[in-house]
Image (cartoon, rainbow, N blue to C red; front, side):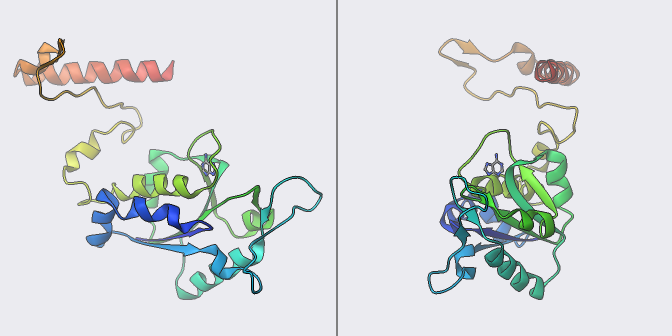
Length: 221
Ligand code: ADE
């Protein structure tokens, strides 16, 4: 899978992609990530990318030309299956959507900044608008990193313990992962539920299931 991310502050994305799980996925050839600096497609000598909003109001708006130029260059090189715009008023990101993206070959992620982007970009060039939650970030970069991380870890071989993915909360829509414990057995007087030490597999399985259901009920209420 190839992911092209377009941003005005590409530096924000260097760290998340050069460490741990995502780096392993890149090194193993599961994904290719290219971060593009929108400013390189800016207008004139000063590489202008934004302007005042028509009709007035505060803040600057990202112009359509730099985005169109950047997209055109990418489109001339390959076809894209999805062109995602990260925005707080998009569809809420979900495990289901992350899973669906693993079947795509090439995707573009456009990160917003400032007051917003010219609506014509959204109307004519974007195929999906995604929000990572009902709160406002300064830009779409961290949201894009969240999306990429959630998608990347779903590729077989990226996470060493595949079983751990399958038991993650939300992987199955109805299941919330139960609480887990490890050593020490007691820390500052706080112990581990005895059932987990019983060696009784059936009872342990039932206990995990019961805990999952309790958590799900709590989340739903
Ligand atoms: N850009 C700013 N806030 C965002 C959010 N919550 N999700 C996606 N992109 C964003």
